[in-house]
Amino acid sequence: MLPEVSGAELEATVAIPADEPSVPMISFGHVSMWFDEHQVLDNVSFTVNRGQTLCILGRSGVGKSVVLRILMGFLKPQVGSIRVDGEEINGLSEEGMQAIRKRVTMVFQNGALFDSLSVRENVAFPLRERGGLAEEKIDWIVAQLIGLVGAEDAADAFPASLSTGRKRAVAIARALAAQPEVVLYDEPTTMVDPIIARRLGDLIQRAKDQLGFTSIVVTHDMRLAGRLADQVLFLDQGRARFYGPLKGFLDSRDPDIQQFLTLDAYILPSE
Image 1 (tube, rainbow, N blue to C red):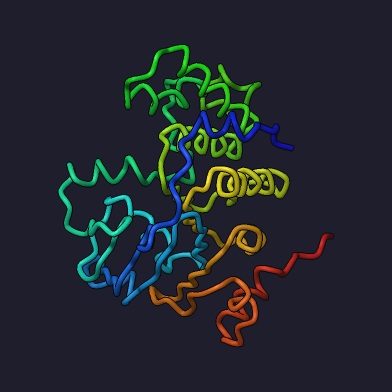
Image 2 (cartoon, rainbow, N blue to C red):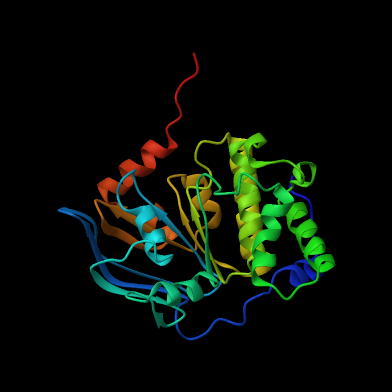
């Protein structure tokens, strides 16, 4: 189990966003994108309100992670509108995207930790980069976040010595240290065992419930989606085959959705 951290400690550690505004926190409007002749997104639209979690589901190669990279400004679609808290970001300069990345951060599959820095130093990095905090305050915040993700025993370890699941947990702690408003998760439970997957799901749920983050989770793991999702976007060959509440997705009679749910639920027999 992850250690408990009090509400007061969490509020002091990470700024809690204000009440939900009238405009969506994230908005995709009729977004299409091609890589050369290959269309990876075809007229995709969705919104995510402040404090909500959207899970993007679908088979491999259907454009799920492309959505996250567009939001981070790593990719720019040829068509469509992308807004963060009402601000159009499609077409922003790199300098403009740097300001967006202070509000929107991403947890990559591999964790993307700095190999030459310890766990403690990795989590402290965004705090030192932002500036304005005394070292004693940075040390306190880092200790709180490392405790939140259950990595106290690895605080002085380097990423090379960590398991895949532990790297992702530390990457989440580092993302929270940046005090974002939106956290993007790219396949957070892939290639980890079910126990670690559940712990990572607990951590993402806690960030949502206790800190009020807006989240987008790319996953093929319906168990994770079932715990986290307020809304579901199901992509198939770059198109949004479903967008709406989780219950509507689970109850859908669309044959492709039913096949996806059936295959996800299938467990290989033991020998």
